[in-house]
Image (cartoon, rainbow, N blue to C red; front, side, top):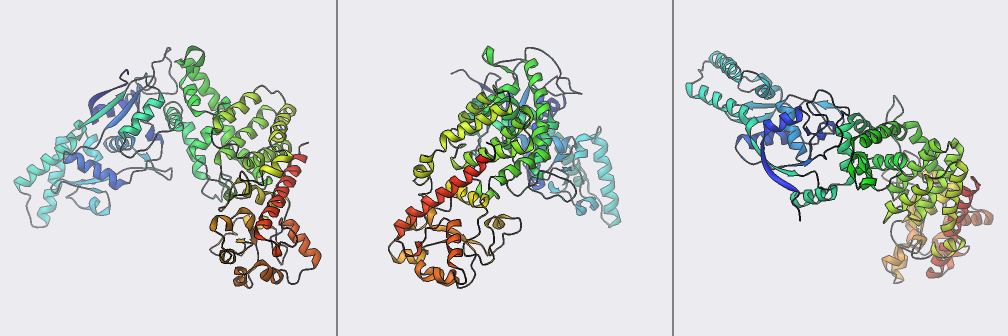
Length: 595
């Protein structure tokens, strides 16, 4: 096998110069810096003591066939010759301290890393008011690395300390003066500290790079395709990367001043946005090809890298990403998800389903000029279908790419609607609801929930079902409103045939915890009675309700009439049929809205 990397040694100063000249890309300067200041302190302490601090892994950028500048100013190189794959936090720390540059922290705020150093103790500390006031300390060691005259800095420090010592009735000894000079000079000379470097050749594919990273990295962290794409964004369009990360950050933080991506359904990650924009802008589901595409690969010429192609594709990305990050689009889309009955992130097991549906929403809006109502109902139906059938699990990228290849040849919203309905109707047949959904691929499973159970709850939301045993006709959908969740919910998921009762009958947990044995209830009184058989507690729960009200309550919650007297196995079978029927009814209501 051809060797795809080489070993070399570079000083910290050489690495910093390569960054300053644009020869070496340091994407982490545009990403949240996750190291604590104390860890940076320990890094410098290890270097000062002559200990090893690990290695760096560089990946040579592909040689481009044409030379043009892409958004890089003030550098001797049009674009980086290599990027840092491993060791970004270390090199960011060294660069920030030695160049006195700020980093972006986990809150996306700029901050300086300020370390203090006491030459006489040869001790580092994170800067604080004590080290700032104490003449024994250099408050900010960045000045040691940025000063044009280290001798003058040493002399000034020594003179100030000597004055302070004299004011306390003590002199600075000659030995202490020599120690100060030696230690500050030693600190300055950390710029010449040598680091081992794995230099991966440009011919290596990203799979090779990821494999090397995993094998060499003791933490066992794996690189993903979106890591490579985000690295490209940092190098060639850092504003785009910052916009993505801002959107992601704001998705988890409520704002009282302006609309943001914050929502009650899902936090957003950079990978989620990368998936959406690759599908929406480039009809690509496989991030592997998304990376090659942005790198400038010419797929007609076996992946040869062409800078003109890279420029064109980044221009297209710059045109399309704002649509993805538009908070108005985002919240319009989330309304479509809630219209499908999925009122909480607890009901969504696949983020892939959510974000690929967002890509389709954007395609329908901008490519096919779908009206708001058209797009709302099409997206609701597709998400309901995709979630129910676990469409975006397993080898989902090939499934999505197959759909995108069909959609890119469509020319109108009517053709798009036909595509949606044809795929949905092809899978959700009468047999699906009557057989598949009632079997082990659907509701005949145990556990806290699956896609079939979540579709059932979503269906009850769509059909405005009231909660079982509710004395105030409270809708189930109220359970999912913001602020309804607390340490003790009045609305709880319970076994209809109580667990204690079934155990007394010899049933195991796998049979007791069947999906069909669950329901959300609203009944605070006599909770202890729920450990008894249904025939005992059900009449008490129904007190005050007329026979018609009881029948209506049972129908809304997919309970067979007389269920409390049924054999447990018969009850499960009958209730699964009714639950599947509810899902089918909700599905038909969603479909009716677009036909």
